[in-house]
Image 1 (tube, helix red, strand yellow):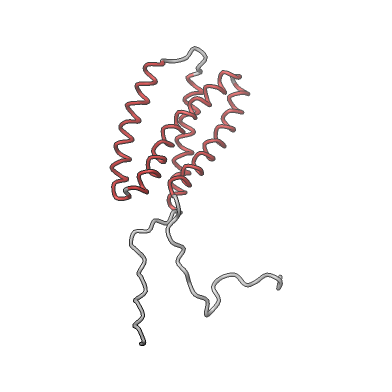
Image 2 (cartoon, rainbow, N blue to C red; image 1 turned 90 degrees about the vertical axis):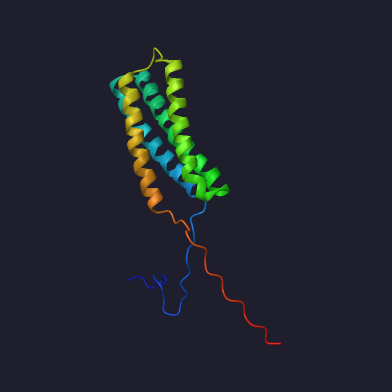
Length: 161
């Protein structure tokens, strides 16, 4: 038993202080999800290189990049609009989602399939990133503290004069 460390936990007589809401939850979720997507890309990129070569790695990275851009836009919109109009953030998320789906579909249809693209590894990168991103997003969001009600303000003290 190590007696040099202070005891853990709440000591009797210590005040319990609320931690308050998470600052900038959307950027935190974006960072954690992007890091998880990058880790998945490294693993799938190694597999793509071993199995099919450099074109597969590029296809895998392209699939990952599209998914990260698609989901990242929503979190950035949530960050900007959540500060300006927290009650309207859900509506903005819905509008941004529709615009993203239409925009990404239009870009993919206009650009077409590049000749270097390996459809299999593009699919692997995109699907793996969706699964990893969503898992990281749900886990991070579940640990986010959102303040729903205003903290109670202490009652003003009466003047003694």
